[in-house]
Length: 568
Image 1 (cartoon, rainbow, N blue to C red):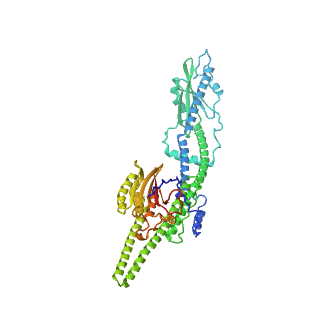
Image 2 (cartoon, helix red, strand yellow):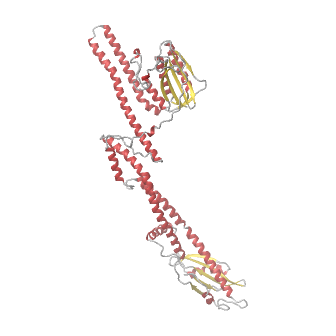
Image 3 (tube, rainbow, N blue to C red):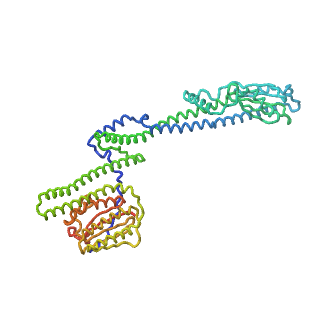
């Protein structure tokens, strides 16, 4: 026996079977599928909101996010709080300034009485004070009596003429909603003088008091009261009250500004949502329409044709990946359908051969006269029946293989232990035939992940095939080596080898290259099943002849070699 040299295995890049395309690269013999798909796409328009729930959801969700944001801003009302604080501080500063004016106009060495006007003319002092539009001023004496009051000249509102029909409409909606959701306000409403009198007691005690209330007209009033000092004694109180609704007008103006920006942002959001929907919903609609057309045609059994999935592989996103996956799935499905049809045709062809032999033997037996002829025909019939039984069993195993490979759970196991157990059992059978059985396995275990029983089926088939081709005095060698990220298992024999023309055919279904004496004893499915199992594990298997180094390729081979490469 010639010891085979180690076989180098080159790393080959994995093929992406999922990217086999069956869309624009495949020309259908029937253009009906294209016509149907184009008609569906033509009816859809640019963005068919009435036909695309996904497009509607994209637009609605984007609008809801913007509406919630603006509603939160309006509900929290930060600009109103800021305006209130600023207005209160302004009134306090203004009231203290007026109080300082009164104090500055008082004579230094003369008694002053605000109630009688002794030492100071209150009206003359107020005439020199410039009040804001609508601001009221009240002057009280030390007994709470109102000495005088004045009101600022009417002026232009802080914000006027800036609203629009849309913002007025949105304002109306907001006021209606906020009126329902906001807590009920106090029913008590006061005018400016009453609000100022409420602050008199606090100001009489020497403090500056601030208060807010609702005016009878519904606007917000701000009032500030501060004492008038002379030589450490409170001589009176000055109170200022803002114009009714002054802050409300400013708040409305700010709200209209926000609503105007909201309208602009809403239009931009709708436009961007339409663009986003057209880039997401429309391609998905095309994919769904193509699949539905294929389903409907197959259901009606009318011009079924092949399903054409749109080619969106140029998109660098998930939709492009989905298109690649769907096109690959359709291609794999049609490949499987074609393979099943071919398998059925091969099965019918293989079964016809023994059936024809049986029919011929039975017909000949009717006219056979001698017992030896009948005995010979009975042997032929028995041989054909066994052949049919073996063929049907192998066909049944092959047809169930795909589903069983998917259902069974992969586990980690020691490949060398499996090979050792098989070699011990099969080596005894080889010895009975007079064939030497040699194993060459590493001492360290090789752990792989897969279906141990199925891989054992592969090695049993390879070893039994090698033994079946050997005569007495030949040898079979099984060896394994680890190569980086894979393991090689090699089965060699010193039999007649494999014809060069059959090296690529031995793994095809029902192909059998056997000696004359073994005709009919094998179905020709063993190597095909082995190849299917190995490839399901992500491995490779091939056959070659053993030749001396630099030998002429036309020379007689020294034996056959089958190599199985499995990933680790």
